[in-house]
Image (cartoon, rainbow, N blue to C red; front, side, top):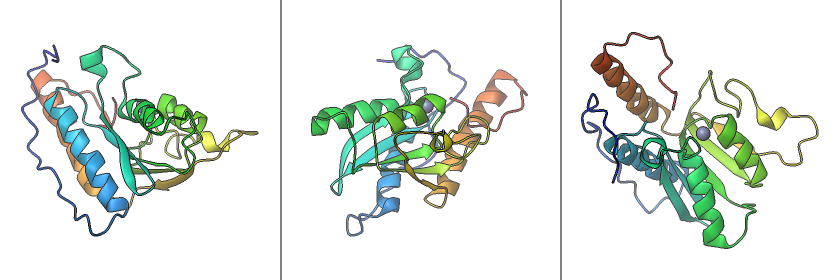
Length: 186
Ligand SMILES: [Zn+2]
């Protein structure tokens, strides 16, 4: 179990989503990433969640686990990628889509390119650290061997933004810390 000792953030006040299985669309898969983000919050982590869809099915779900694992690479996207690769028995995720509640950081954006994943859908753009169009775009690297199809915003953006911004607002207030932030830092 987590040894996370930050008691300044209470349990997540947001409800999980229960999307209909009748429409396996972007909203359906993003709702599952959102639910992972709520799990992250309740585990004492910055609330970011990710899932990987392949062949119409979710083959990996993960939440941010940096505090619990004591590992700066334990972002939701990295953990979801690793699980997805084990699930299909190939490090190449061609044909898969990763859904994540906020724009991937430099590390995760790089890992997504390396995985050859076909598509990434993220809910909340991150103008400070996002590297799929927010702060910069790894797709724009000259000579990159793989280009990730990106869909930014539009899918559950408001709900995902409210979740993560509320988390940071509560944590900031709990610490008496008025440091300016866009509320997206992991
Ligand atoms: Zn990341």
